[in-house]
Length: 533
Ligand SMILES: Cc1ncc(C[n+]2csc(CCOP(=O)(O)OP(=O)(O)O)c2C)c(N)n1
Ligand SMILES: [Mg+2]
Image 1: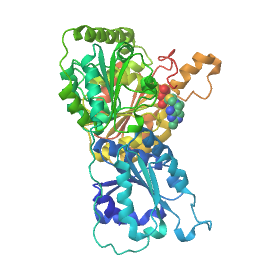
Image 2 (image 1 turned 90 degrees about the vertical axis):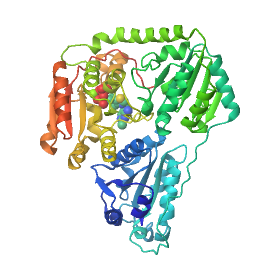
Image 3 (image 1 turned 135 degrees about the vertical axis):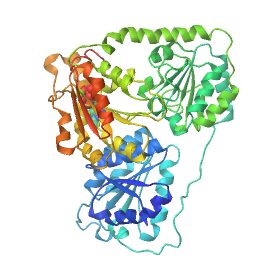
Image 4 (image 1 turned 30 degrees about the horizontal axis):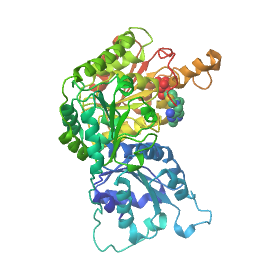
């Protein structure tokens, strides 16, 4: 019945690590034709379900067993809550009939999951399975999206019920377009702006609003910055797309329009100098957090942007100077970083790795970022060509998402090729799930930027406390590519910049999961300020 209910929601795969408590669900999946992808840690199962949902714009399912199975998902579930991405975690549990008797793997799982989910419940009888599963999906996908937890005790799963009819999804699409008065205010602010800027995030992807965004910014001639899954919503060569001048824009603009992303630490909690602020977000609770906007719209990004495009006027003269000013700020960034981007040093500079990835990867590639400095550097240089093709953990900053995300994206069959840019530290958290990529023939290429350190912490640590203060941030210069000797797949080890391109091409051409271990200069990113808070 669980498998039937999942299938009715349009889900054709579940991510899991086995356990006796949830055994009947596997049998149900076999009968319903639902693919079962089993991983090596429950964290990866929940990350995979999250990523599957992100690229399908749907809600994925992680199925885990009682006790340590459920606790293993906690970090990934918290990551989804923070990123407002939907996921259904189905947790096994000791039979209800054994409650408080000291049963195997017993824990108050509901209390553990409640604070990190939007909704959490125990399905009390077999006869209510359909209703509880569809309720779980309804909560996960209702804006603001987020993770939910449904507990299925063993005696409920092994029990019997007579379903009257096959389950049906119980959701209605709900697209709202925000308060009309706020829309008027927003359009007025935009039409009076002399130096406007747009910052658009993951909401653009979730609401399928890339073309609406393009129409809006082209009509209003609005310079645009993209983040999260919103990256790629404008093609990199678009005249209004900017990647490196965001600080200049936020400080010098007169009106900033933030769409589909919260005013959190990534936007300096809204504490930028631009006096005018328009904020569009699917979650009304985000509007006014940290800063009260001049106009605020809680709604679907596509609908709101459609309305914006209708109301916004082509500016008169004067915008050219503002655009040129921002282009100059972009050029200044390149001038400052050109030496690093083009660096031929050995060990390799992080930015040079970014340049090589940008040169080799085809536009349809999905890129997952999982690491510290290496991801920060690569993401500045790498161009994203299509929306939804960049995945990072989001505001939870969770290292270790990479292998799970790769499994989820691979199982969804999304993108032409799949590359995961990882730190060596990040790789250690869930690197064992390279085995799952091999077992399920998902040809993801894991590019491990190997500085033998937790670099993003080590560098500011040295800055604060000097060389002797470097504590707990060194790693061994391990050869991660050699894991292919154990698990299979295609391994490459790279020590010079000239080797990066050919190694990437061989890895991508192998058609197998691959690990490209790239020895990076541990001191290339020296001197950066701590980015955490
Ligand atoms: C699960 C988790 N643990 C710890 C941190 C804190 N943290 C942020 S960046 C970082 C270092 C990352 O090292 P690595 O993945 O090797 O990337 P590098 O900075 O060296 O390029 C750490 C430990 C975190 N964000 N997530
Ligand atoms: Mg590192």
